[in-house]
Length: 261
Length: 373
Image (cartoon, rainbow over all chains, first blue to last red; front, side, top):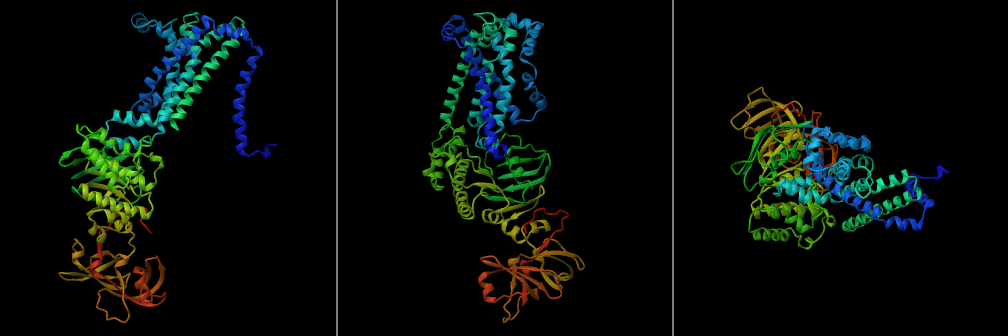
């Protein structure tokens, strides 16, 4: 059979495999589907709160990540400087270290004098909403920088050279040439960063805990339901998380595609 | 006036050595050389995109060596043009005007419209860059470079991607723009025809060094050394010994040609004595095949055999071997002249190496890697 398959068909088969792995997982959730419970859970104050803080925290963490990632990615993409290779390597740090370890490192930091001082004088992070944002920010920053750097690397520096010769200062060049040209890549990076933040669990639970109506994000709520052996409730929350995630990703993708047409 | 003094630029595997250039105001100075000789590096360093290890760059008496690119006053057109793909044609053209700190920009916008008109792109102004042809893109790039009102233009082989017809049309356009707007142009090219068409002055760059700088006629007529001559595709290069001399001429005996060649002393700045070895050359179009029936008044006459004839369209390349010699002399004859002379292979002919067209070369230890064939 395989002898008849050409490379195109074979590669498409693998693409459908990737799709199938996830779709099968999603479809089997419906084995435990409970319609009335879905409505009840979705309209419960606790779930709505979880949805709200998940969306707000993921959005703030993404914006913060982009705020740091865009200029740092520009520096890594365009300039040669001492320590560049080290910084570049450290971007993979959140991927190497497990999210739980990253969360533990944050907790350890806040138990040190500097961390304690920050907690006392700047903001309380441990077991608070700020902790969720911080955990998601730390988890996504490296990835956001890596993704945006890849997007900037795609833009030939020749455009910037010409813009400078036409009298534009470096910051003007960045704002009028580099950013607009890498807009699509940056938006794609932002979407992935946001999705990663929305689904973040390990670091968030370690830093912010599992307090209902306070620090319980959707992934944490799912974990709590599962821990109490409430499979039907777990399925409902997973479906809510999937629906919200995909709906927002789809809308953003639709908007950006339309703009590029 | 742009002055480049003792410029040295070192990159990973390349060195630009002690480059000295003066681009006179209102002139077009072309730096020509083989691919990879450092032409683009020279432009980038002049623009401020590369750090100078040594040397200085002056513009109108002002030292700009340490100024950032946007403060040097140059407009730059790179080889790939780098038109901003997210902007329309008009937005590209006025990009420089928007960056200008001049308060009243009316004159500049007027200049932009004027340039669009002169370059024949007014109908394209609302179009996206991706919808333009190669020639249209070229015109937009020139308009963008000039619309900011800058008088100093750095051009990096801007016509290399165009077909012959379009190239020549744009050469004329650029010449006209240069005159109309009194532009000072420093351009790099590897195209001999383009160089001698557009330039007032020519510098020849080989392996990171400037080998010759002069008015274009002089560079064309008198290549300074063997590498420059080879780069220009000149194959008729010979050597000989000075056997006699007077105030006006050297008489050189060439063993290769088995002939005595008279070289005017005005064709070289070197001073030779009897017994000195001389390298000399002549362009293929400066060798004349004489009609057998006419009296031979010309100088440096050589008798020999035509060994091959290669038609080239408008002209014919003739290979000629002097009697007793084993080296070929290349001769380019207009097609109509070739027909009239009834040239045939293996036929005897008499040729003249016009003495006023002979140039004397300075020997160099360098070799041109990709000299034209």
